[in-house]
Length: 229
Image (cartoon, rainbow, N blue to C red; front, side):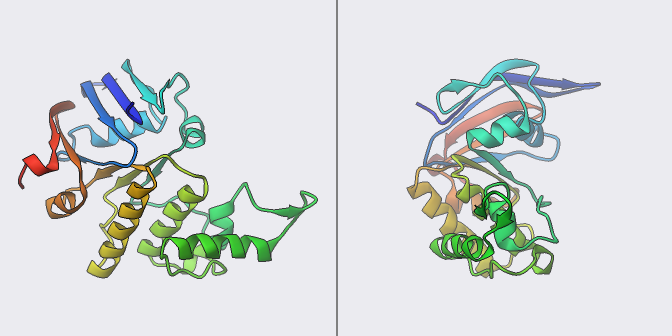
């Protein structure tokens, strides 16, 4: 059974057919690359998966259940996390507070156990080889480090599907290698990855399958091993 199953999804905006009968699947423990030029429909498809836009037609199933409530909260609670280029974090809070936000241990539900929060975040970051101090404010981090915090936050909430939208745009070669190591670790833990990028060399380093969109339609879905750049 596929982790994510999209069947004949369509989405129309005034004057634009953004998606036209799109179907694809992503399995647990798979990196599925989504490719296409700007305007091909990638962002609209991600917004349908993540509950921002309900599709006009077709269906989306996740973890064996048909999605009926298209809201970002429902998608997030179900285990779908999107890591956008512009990260949604609270910059005045610490790394640990951002990772554990809404689930922080407290004394009697009133006073936050900051030492315990920092310990939990430090252990999580170390487990995935993310070298970030959990006690510093997020506004002191570089963009790549903030992206790592968003991924750590998703892992803390046991995300089942991680959607990465141009994740290496602000990264140097060393950080890209570290991100790829993290993605391989997540694969081994049966997390599904939907990977969006214009960098084909990255795609062929990572992807198990590749889907190409053009003008809101699927051109092809094939194993990466059967394709070349």
